[in-house]
Length: 310
Image (cartoon, rainbow, N blue to C red; front, side, top):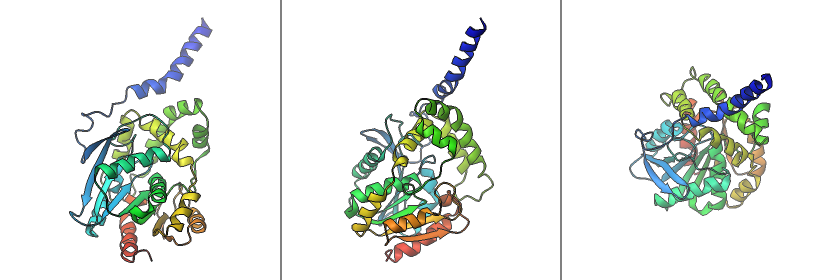
């Protein structure tokens, strides 16, 4: 009898995170009622896109990172608009208001989404492509494949060069089955704790922490984060950066001095792969520099893009 009760208890513990996930909301029409942009039906699912900035002018396309959807660009969009750019942002699959398709979230997965977004939105001229964190990996892969379509490549605390994970996160990433269970069980608490720690940090996006934590309300977000950790974020992009260098594509990389996720030592590593890349460091900035130090990011872009990154 005791053994039976123990087995039942163990089964309940094992089932708990999956039961909790099943009770999360589905990203459906009701959930999308307050979406600020519009939707594209693409081959892998529905994608939320938004135009901002100037009414006319060159196009800047911004790609967000692992856990924070396209609202991470709100203040950057305003600044780019003042510089004369039309700005296209979108939610990566598994985040924001976009669908949550299953499958490995590797470079090809995200490239297909970006390529289809640009095709459906009829973006045919050269673009300034801006990638933040994981979005830096996506932007790098796209630029390596489509260099003639890029006017400038801007990478903000980009992944694909060097990334720090704590021991538990590495174990979860590298361990199938058990890692999946631990991710479902522990990630919500980790995400809430890490975002709560930024509540006192000056931020240019109103309600940033609440918006970040809202992602946990919907099915598929946690699985998407894990899939990206095992997919595109496992890829070191030396080959892609060297191809971009060979193509002569202007690159600007912006780093946070106190970034604990993408360490500042990645700055030197990029230099060895792409000697012509212009690199700038923002003193005191952590990984959230797009919304904690947006004025400095915009000032760097304003100066370097005006110079043509020469």
